Length: 287
Image 1 (cartoon, rainbow, N blue to C red):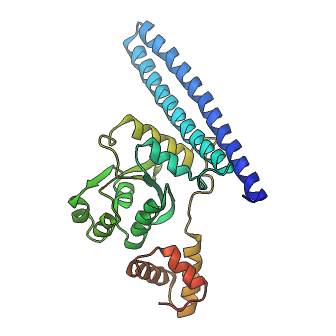
Image 2 (image 1 turned 30 degrees about the vertical axis):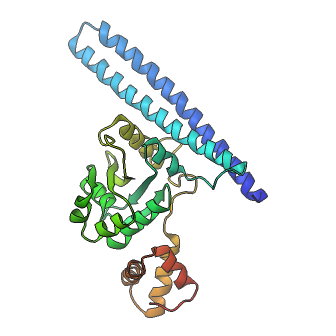
């Protein structure tokens, strides 16, 4: 590893461990507050008071669980990065820890705008990246549906191809047999989704999924340690946007048409939009 990369990695380890430590502190404070309100709920003679304290206690318990999950994810990333610094394994991705926490090998976060256009993606591995790029190209799939409908989407086996006629056959040809996607949302609205590929049985509705989803919402958008870039693992498709501008000028078309051409070529060539973008930026003729 080059010195600059070594220093950068050590910085990531320090940052991740610091975030994990602060999250554990917040979890302890939330748990202590929950315990206080649980005691008050038992001792309060007023039924409305008991109801109030019970509600507050439950809120603090959920907050504590969320912070603990947040801490586990950051600690896992720190451990992997530390191992990488020592020459063990490849450069880690934050989402790899998310996938493992949910009992699978592949998971992805997709961020969208108000029109459900895919703005950015963060993935655990290359298969997850291929699946998300397929959604980006075709404009259909589980992540998009979960964000648009603001509810969990689960599909397996032949149902995948029936539900998404374009996406489904290609997705299953990648070797995936099921997909589960849940929205990432706040009171202000839905800003994306978490997709889990080949999820274990019983994950939907589980405490693990609820806590990880809550932690990711805080990581992406909320809280004093929010990091939308996920330690540099978020892809904003910058190279695709650059290629869109170049192609638009080269062939004299609009931005939307240039993006549509790149997506069409990626689908036809069974490759990623980033690969097509690199060809364009390297001066290769198009199409």
